[in-house]
Structures are given as C-alpha cells and as structure tokens.
Length: 94
Image (tube, rainbow, N blue to C red):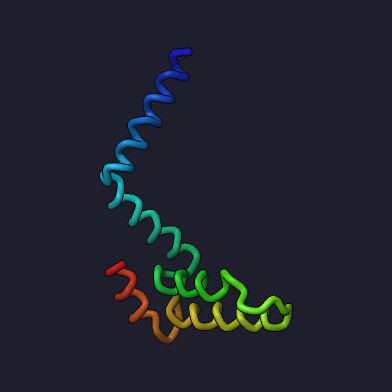
C-alpha cells in the first residue's frame, strides 16, 4: 500500500514539474536523441508528418504519391540529405 502511495506521489511531482516547465530542457534533448536515432531532425520529421499526415484526395494512387513526396522532401533535410545542414540549423531554433 505504501508503494502505491509513493508511486502516486512521484507521478504528481513529475506532472507538476512538467506543467511548470522544469522538464523542458530534458524533453527537448530526448526528442533530439530519438529523432537522431530515426535518422531525422525536427525539420524533416515535421515536414514528413505534415505532408503525409492528412490525405488531400482519398484516392489510393494519389495517397501513395503524397506519401512518397513527403518522405522524399523530408529525407532531403534529414541525415545524409542534401539539406542536412539547413535542417540541423533550423532544428536548433525549434
């Protein structure tokens, strides 16, 4: 029973720290680490999600084209892409 109370207390403390902004630097660092492991940065990931997230036309062929275009454009700003430097600089400011 005491473990449950301690666990709930820890959750409340973490939630309050998150809401007040004390965890923001750590959250940003974790985002960068995860995106780096995926081969992306914030710019390439944002482009990929915005271009492939919502389908403009509900046709299967157009959806495939939209997905490929979004992935290719995002890949240009990710790791190994032609605009990797630009993507990294812009990601630092986000």
